[in-house]
Image 1 (cartoon, rainbow, N blue to C red):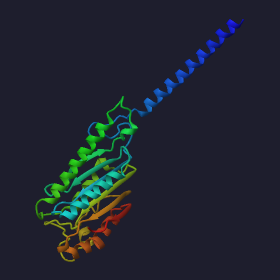
Image 2: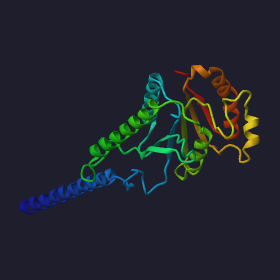
Image 3: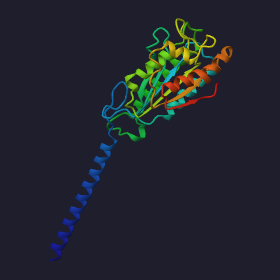
Image 4: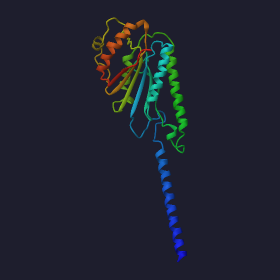
Length: 263
């Protein structure tokens, strides 16, 4: 009788141990699946199984030379905007293109990958992915700074054309819940064949009369303006910041506007 009881006890203990092992294995399998990364696009690193939740575009106006203080500010701005990102948010860095105003040069455009501590090494080399992202971001920053620090005044400063291009970018569409635009510029729109804020008494009404399409649509877009000071044109800049651009962005239906202090 005692032998039968002992055997039954051992059998029961074995069943309990097997059940515990299955629970542990199931938990490990579940954790592995939870840590498995979602599918992403190889070039943009954005998720392919879910819509984009947030996109920040930094538009850099380097049509005129940026001095050392401006380049320091640009570096700080890009670092700040990178720090704002959540995983799989997209960051794009563009530069105004004088030769093709409707096609700003794209220096960088990727989604922020998951941090290495939230990944499973069985499925991805997260540290390598993050290192590659950081390297490409640094290269884009260096490219922006190089272009900003070279050359002299350009024949045009097509800020509005570049803003139209941003608004029309299919990767920056209204279906994205959070959209943010950061404009780094001296804000002195200049078209030698059209409207120019270098012309005395140029105002928003004049521009609107010459532009039948009106301003681009920036509904539900948060705007950050980072002004680049031009001491030789301080009065024109003051007018642009206080009169022209507030009217322009109000008509563009921008959701919120913030302006950094001049460097």
